[in-house]
Image (cartoon, rainbow, N blue to C red; front, side):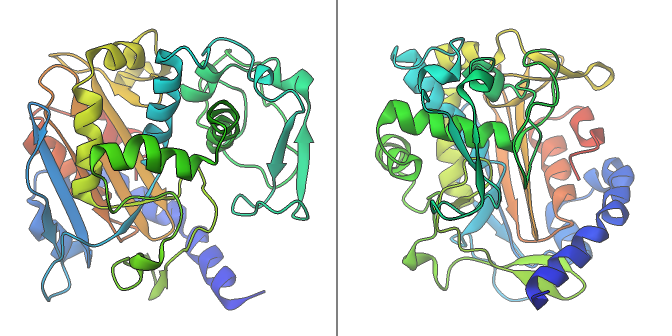
Length: 353
């Protein structure tokens, strides 16, 4: 087994140990971000706060000495999903995508599902998801994670339950959504986002694929145990391959928060996730029940990276934080208490760790 793959698997095997630290999230949330970064050994982190929907200048912190750099490029991991959802919803609002029609409408020849998610060559391992299966799934169900698809599958892609029946987080659902968006847009999704989202919003440092100008700026992820990883995504992965900065992602959040019609679509009839925590899932975003109205949120978890974004749909205050450390999530909990003062049960959700 190649050394890198073995080391990543070793770090993955320790995930239950790392996740157990989530029980301390409330205690850590009471501490300032700078001190947390130092104590947790987070060498690179950056965040940006939005007030009334307007981004403030980004802030960079480091817990490892030296000068922090707010221009560092991070893997945003699953913070990719709201960006892809934004593109899909814009197509829907323009009348080009029917959220409730079967996705087979746009994929009449079926869907080529690649087993390693980063592969895209016709010779790479894949299976063909039939039109019959696709006819049971809608874009809305992909957006709110009720499609019945698993999170990931390295073999033939099959439904775990009938679409629409219940919520179950699915990276594979967003890969299928990628194929739908590409079919409707008539171009590869990374190029579509460059043209329709990143350039118009001034997100000059953002891309779903690796760019040569990221060399020297992109940080490696800290997996723990002295292991570091810097992935160079050659193909877009709609579930997890966004490279970005805190300033860029705050610009994206500002665009979402400024569009009241879009917000209404996102929060309309969300899928229940965990009633005891007041959590549900809308179109592309998690929804946390709050005293003054819903908070949108999404967490990110790629090997060696943790990221989090949250915003109030009422006050339009919010933040995004990007870190290059497997234990970086407490920084998000700290910012949440500062930017959106209240208790945030989302940080008791087992996946957010």
